Image 1 (cartoon, chains in turn red, green):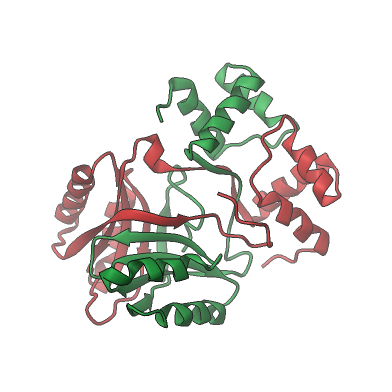
Image 2 (tube, rainbow over the protein chains, first blue to last red):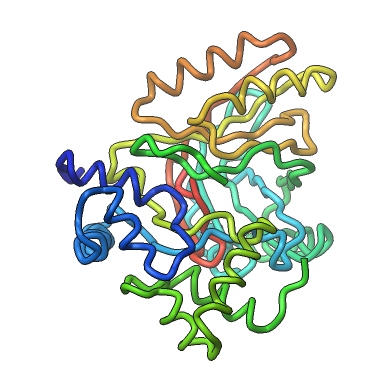
Length: 162
Length: 155
């Protein structure tokens, strides 16, 4: 955890709002945060270097760029095989995220992988491939049938705008 | 919405490497071979149509001392609407999906503390028709593919 000054937090509050779509967006942000344009760019670079900011850029809606189907695949994997199965999954370009989570009564799945494809069938085929390669049979794919909400988290109290 | 080749090149550029320079849209225009005004118009259009959700920083929530979780909820189908209304009312809930399973509502929560998350989940559990809510924070993460990465992707 990196210490942030009050002026840093004021600047972060402005930076986490959507970037103004004007010729000099950082000058716009600077004016609102009470710093210079150069300060804004330097601070963002600094925060990228220190890891507070993982990436600075656009968040894209994958459905509109051709990935019509997204399936959350969930897998029951013996603990001692998690590494090996995850290696199979992370090698697939169609898989974006891979997480281990706890099980609970009635839910035996401990490994989660988000699979993206142009159709649900394509997502199913990727899962079948992974199952075969990893020697697993107990899995399920939960397709999202409706998106109720998708927003950016707010850390510094900026209004949510998406 | 249909995307032309210039849109696609632009999307590729602005996802991974948005210029931290005084006139970023001019830099993008030079990279993809068009004018600054054309880039600005395209970005505005892509944002209005929802293809671009937002341009800005993706924070590492752990570095900011925030905590996050994925929740699986089992909600009586006839009561989904009320449950979603409650779930979505929290700004700490960033994603919320209906999924084809007995656990039919899946949402993510990002907050400064676990207690804060628990308080939200207890409010949701109190809604009529919400049978069960399980919080499933990631215990290990193996991959975040940058071209798919979106807000809240470290949950």
